[in-house]
Length: 442
Ligand code: HAM
Image (cartoon, rainbow, N blue to C red; front, top):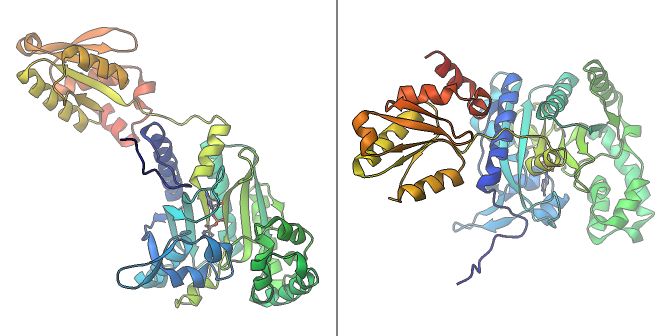
């Protein structure tokens, strides 16, 4: 029977041929984050639907059109997280972390769900690498987050990514700006889509990021919020620009960036790549000083960003950035007969204890079939164990790339030493530093 139940449109399987890229990206992100003093947080995949309505905003595309919502067996109205910020804000209030030492610096790798129209770089399940900082009012925090992304992208080896920044003010300056926007769009009402007509009174700024092309054309000529900033917001924005200048991070001020989520105030920013087509924003973020309080927490400023992993990987592929890949198998131990099979198994277990990828036969295949398998999985070395090897207590270790063989005692330490002595370059590509140091100290 043919497979008649297939994956859902907009989702993807990450198969073994690609999973090392994801691991690499996540590990690179988490270790770079730790250099800046960030600690990882993990939150649930689904939450009370009201959390997103209250934080992301009930007039946003995300809440109005894209959220996966469902009622559970207990009649609770839930939603799959469309992003990480709302859940993390809830978690820091609920856990009391928000009352601890400030700034609180958290990072995360997470899946998100949005029922958007799938296209290149736009998925219904996608993954974010993100950071949130709580308790920091100064533009130094904004600059540090931007500088993190800038240096992380450079560390990955990516080039040609531009940074665009803007300030969307605070509730004080926003009021005047809303009035100006309302007047502008009200005069062009007949060109707005149905959803934006509803936004006109409630939240005219949301019209600016509507995906409808007609609304987009109008938005391009609309008043910009930078012209309406109050003195405090202006000085915060200037403070950010000064810091970016002194960090030598290039940026463009783009007064049209408003971001598609309601919680933002003051700084908003995006990193954009020219290499991946229309869905070119690889990172979006900004400040959201009122969110913690609006969810029932103390008055604490906050800010953050998230990078789309799928889009980052697309840029890496487009720019042919190499991703280190550990050989799938350091040593395949083939065996003939019950005794040899047991010995192969125990040697493999001991070698794994020393950090090597070791495999032995699990199927009871013929020697020929085992060697074929070792070749298929790309084993760097093979060793055959039979009666003769068990009796002599030694076997030959074959380098599959060069065909060279060397006789080694059947002892995991001796085999490990031989494996370690081979070309350091390809052996160490996947080992972490602690494993390496451990081996070198032997
Ligand atoms: P966002 O701009 O909605 O912001 O998403 C952040 C990044 O996630 C985007 O720049 C993009 O790379 C990726 N992304 C978004 N939607 C999709 C999709 N459908 N398919 C593939 N990738 C996608 C947020 O989510 C905020 N929570 C960021 C933030 C954190 N702001 C403050 N703290």
